[in-house]
Image (tube, rainbow over all chains, first blue to last red; front, side, top):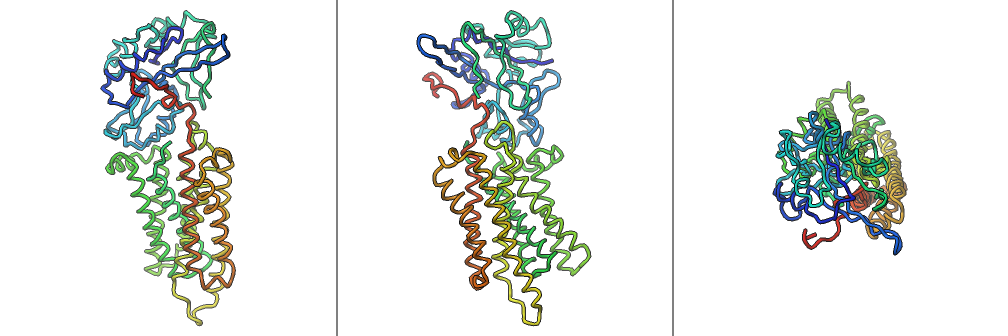
Length: 195
Length: 289
């Protein structure tokens, strides 16, 4: 099982609702985030300009570098769901996972003394029902959650609607295998690698 | 990225402690002053403890160090550092016990282990940072710079201890004095390794990126870490400098420590991340960003 997010950038309007929903659901204080929305662009020369929004959060890597460097196995990949999670009881706050994450989507919570990141709202999704708050509250219906190995899951059905050239992943520095997929059709904007 | 001072100090102190121990091992093999060696080993143990305390200060809570110790077999960068820290400490303690009890068998083996572990700890304190997600760290020149600057600092610390040791009596042995002459050459080699390590890492960073840090690059890494350290080591070779061995060693310690700290600070301030998504967020009134 490989549970993760699929984000359709053709639909994303950059409204930040996913950030707000995440902060409310996970009770994140000011300055703490599990996700952010990045503006990519505008690029090009008028009138041929383009821009898209890139919601970013833990990419749920299948070969996560954060897990490999963790000295206490606090960062782990749940074999049952494929979700990359942090056991805060085991986290010693060394922050090596923050340095090792190729996407810079982990934060150190100084008050709690632990590293934190997107959990795919495990408190909601752990029993197999429900979707993360960011998916539930996406105004544009751009976010999907499910098992990439299940052809009937939301993510698989949405992916099946698009040609290969519209499906993207973030650049992978060393076989981390990010699971999150982004849909961006060339008719809206060309995908930028960001590196 | 913000400079992690506990890690900067830990890696330099632990690396320098290893280097002092390595110099003690070398002295034991070639036959230097026994009093200097014992004092140097005590100094190395003190530096290891101080460095270890700095390392603990980096964790969210000092008690978390216990979790790191109980997960030694994870073979992560931290666990390798911990294993070497323990091994180096044990070698130092064993050396002190053997020499106090005047047990000669095994001292040579301990001396060789002191050299191996002493150099290894400096290297592996830097090797944990060689990761794909940090392009400005992802080079073996980084642990080479860590090891080199540790050796240079450790060499001058050993030279300072040697300069404070009682002079051998005329009858004791002229041989010992002759062997002591090899120490400045060993310090020069250590300083050259430190200067080479700094230069290699600066070249890897790119001179444009490194020199953009101004005083840290020109003052810390170049003037102190490379020029100052080498100058002290070369002056130390001149026979006439024997009378001023202590001030030269102190100047060398200052330069080597400044260079070691500067190269570690440059590592942190030049860190950019592979794709630092959370730092790319656009300013937003709603999110108070």
